[in-house]
Figure (tube, one colour):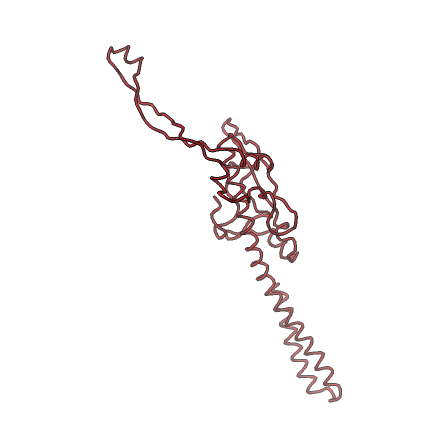
Length: 245
């Protein structure tokens, strides 16, 4: 882009110089037509130079707006999956099952309290009452997952849909287990490619965005939360878009 700007500026300056030369050396009867054509060329090159600067600015503004909307949907998916794991011990592998879970599942409200009871073994050994400390977990009640996560909103029923970009696009979601220290640990990943989010934007700028490696940008060619390769449930966006955790 910078190369084009330098070339365009050079051509504009050269054209202005050419106008001056024409004014100096070309016969008067040809000057009006040539001058008009040259000023049209100057105006065209000026416009192209302006657009070469403005288009990336407009692209980034639209990109940031769309990313922010998509990230909110990814957070909903992440929160729903964490609730699913809390209740069932694993992540859901499809949206239908996850939505059904939200509609029907409940969180158990518990209270932990410390107390003491007679230690029968020590009491028998020493002939006097001996006590030991234990922890009791009391169930206080239940709260619907739907009310806890989404209150009066039904947006979870459409959280599989990518809210901006290519019409009809859906998030890709996977779940499974990773073996670490001989333990199967549940993992999941929900993602959508940048090309889907920015499908109607300039192709060259999309190619550049897919190659971004920056602490202030979304690295890689997609927005995602979770991972099928690591035990993590954070998103891959920077803090400029809000907390990834």
